[in-house]
Length: 171
Ligand code: NI
Image 1 (cartoon, rainbow, N blue to C red):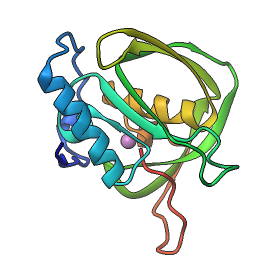
Image 2: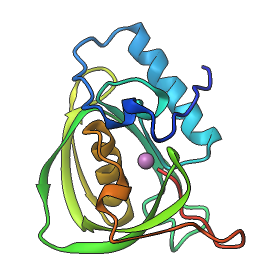
Image 3: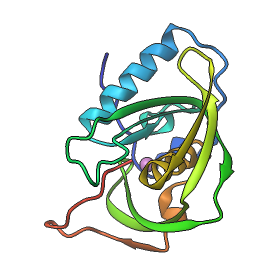
């Protein structure tokens, strides 16, 4: 595994609609492992392929669902290829986001509280995930990356965090 370089705005790859993945070859497996390593090193709780300069529809997310209540809650790793939001709740929730590709910035974004995501796992087998709360938010942020959308486009409020401000998990 190797670390990949994270790309920052205004790199045009972040504004492109990423390509669908059709080949589940060794290169893809290497890319997935590299993205997981890069996300952990950053550190972040999610990463989309365009954020390492690859315009492909692939996201990785690692987050403990009940992290807010339990400090050592087990983390779960998600690798989803060609992810699509299949269902989204009408209920929305405002939350604070940060992005590895938009350094030293935070913003408040309205997201669906619950979503269902369809896609493929790293072997190319179909997966369906029912997600809510923070995890649903992370997936919406990452899937936006595949459309060339940044959270700053959707934010109702944006600010530069003060040096002593607790910075939100980056995605
Ligand atoms: Ni991001």
